[in-house]
Length: 550
Image (cartoon, rainbow, N blue to C red; front, side, top):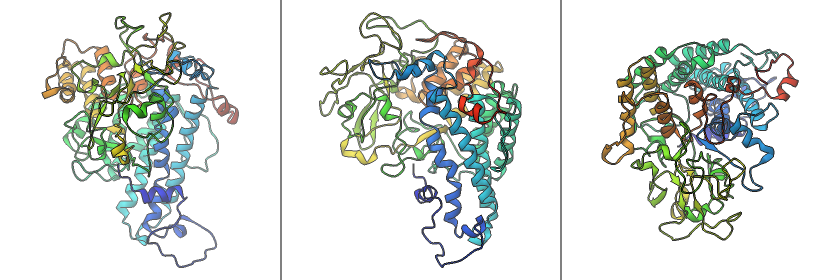
């Protein structure tokens, strides 16, 4: 959770020289990295540029495209709220266009991330690290962290749009898109070349600080191979499995599955044994807090007994499990996010903060009454003056259940990152945001084994994680050779990584994203596995060619 805030501050100030640098006035005929960077802090100011962008990149529109286009999360229209010219409906129905702002902002955010990273790499490459008291090993680490995050940004762009224009310098002229395969191979080379020079984590439980360690880059390469069929790289599951096995053996540094379900998400989750790459967040310093506005009801501060610093938008909910009150769970294979959790699962309890960083449950569901203060959240819109009772369906009137029928009490809400009460308000937003955690290594290896026909080995890996979700480790519904099919695999990814911004990628890899139905969604064609290039991007660079189907 504790990123080096002085480095972030420097980065946000454009590398202003603070702290212990030499402040004697010097005059130069020109400013170069070698003349500007006069102390170690300046190198971190430059190194942090793509990392501060990464913090932003993981939220908002990037998250929307990964979650709100899937069976996991939805944002129904509520009266006059959240219609927004139908953009959230188009996300769920896969009818988006290149003019939709969510698509445009993801493209722009990805390309600007690439530019920021190349700029930082060019600046640091020209620095004499020895002259400012840093070793050549540190320089190699910094440059290759930038190579790794550059590969990661390209991999994300490949995931969203397919092949991208490949730039190796900010001085490169505009160019056409490379093919999927070429972009895949570019990412692969960046990761493979970076891994040997990036420093590893030193000890189990060492606080993750937001920088890239050797295991982070190795996981990036494993993710690339894991999704290679969708990325134009062919079947690379065996290569993914080999990296995962090395990671579990500790060859890239010491990591382990956390003993508790909440350890990877709690107030001190930077010290979780499975924290591989987390966005640092700390109250009043660098808060990762974009999501809370969109999940929770207007008076959620009453339920949490916590003074949220701004209004709540009451928007995003778990994909509903039922069509109406008292109705059966819908019979779709996908979706029904809340009901995918076993009733004995410790995470399925309503979220309650007990104080002193202790809490239980992962959802806002039912009557929103704080068990300690007795305060009840009261409706402000269509349920004005009534207690807020959150339900696992969208239909409130009894007439229909569509994206147009939402109420302010529609939908179960996710509390993946805990919220304290007023007594511990200084803990608000202290949980770091997980971009990569070690559980993913176990699940990637499990799916690779499943694909190779080793269902028993796959089940053992998943169950090793599942047991922490039940009292005394007694799992009433473990994964077995008999029940592990593609839908059970999809369910296991869903319930473990709910809301962590990866669902679309998993469904595409499993072949379910465009072929399956779920609430408010019918099958579409395979062109919708990619988003269109924005109209503005096409107009700005005539060398770009649009994706098929748009």
